[in-house]
Length: 332
Image (cartoon, rainbow, N blue to C red):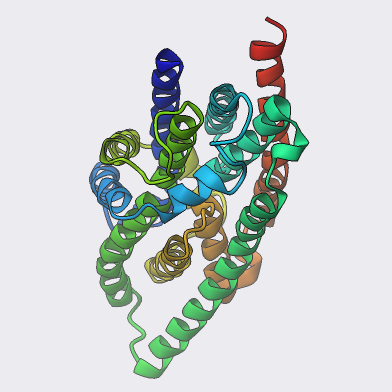
């Protein structure tokens, strides 16, 4: 059993590492696009603040570790976690390779649910807890779009009433603001996303009988925070290109507005202990701010393909994890 737990920890840290470079674009794509920060500095800056954010909370980890199934009672709980992580890692790498900003959160939640059904039956899936997480994952991009739209709308009229029409001066000011907003977003990203890996490790520890509560041990926090920070430091350049260039032209003012609105949504979700997709939130915020500036300049074809990926990620991850479990643990 100890060997399987060690394997779970390694898989979870690999997932967290991939999550780091897969989701780097969330925090720094806008600031790189507007040249507020150089790519190298932006990635290292995001990595450090991801690590700090990941160390300061654990409520999301408890939600992931206990809302989808009870790890203390589920049959084959250790094997369930292994199958979920293998499926989630596969889907993350596939979407990263094609530069698609899919959600690591959707992937992990869907994979865990599919693996639970495969390993312990549908009866072991806590449908209420699962659906609550899914509702948050669905609603958060809509709220992010609305908040981004409102913040950008307010900024637009504040700028107009200020009488400052110098485009170059405005760009300089908001590039400076972006350094702060990108840092806040990186901190927020670490505080929500790294906890998902923590939660899945705790699920495995409880299922394997190594602890009895959903509390996150300090070594799990440090390991997950370090894995995400290291992954972020590598940078997901394929996805950065999609987010920063293929949705719409990002200027410093709407880049700042997108970062700020995303941080508000993510911090709120972390405070109430709910996982969400930072990918979906930042992308929706960009679309919301861009709709205020020039609606027709948003590249809706790219947005449509991204939304399609968001929609299919949970069911595909469920099926993948179900199949992985059956292949690894039912056929042999």
